[in-house]
Image (cartoon, rainbow, N blue to C red; front, top):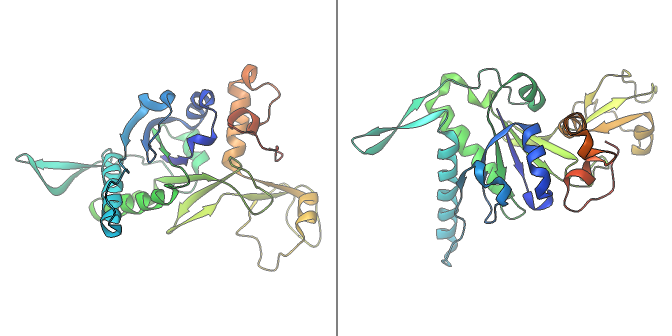
Length: 266
């Protein structure tokens, strides 16, 4: 099952239905105050992050509690609180679902799983809450559903700006949460053999799994191959396939973004 964190302020509101359909989103959790009306029908939880006090310690407790409420709502499909005479004694009904899902392969999940994926709405102020949300969710599942290993089934994805590899705009880079940190999905595809690079033409490589000695000027790398994000490329291809009459000749950034930056070659 995929969980995507996106800043909706940067996406054209009228394009959200196409994006949600491609990403197979059925439920939405919000960490922002304003939820675009077009998304409200899928909203299952909106976190209250308006703190009226002035005490810093109390504010942190308030935020943590707000994130926990979002986690309980998200986890309910897998780990449902077990009532006991009208109260909850921190026991859960455990559900074995998302069996075929892979934590590090969002495209596989889209193509081969029929899961109801989740969209988490964030902005620049609440982006760090998403990581807290992930950690708390996984901690609960590891404790109460230990043998099911949901950490290997839930794929947490963050859409953000790519500052390295000349990916400098929003909606050109995604990161997947793995072993306590977000790791870029960016890959390199050699299109022409070069003895300095010495990589197989036509095979893609994670930029983080290239040899340590692989220190080639970026200008040469871009002449000999392509740097791309698989999930963004998937969205690009699917939007062309599913909505050709709407997409027409526009690039992916023009089509989806509120303020269209320059095309980065997708």
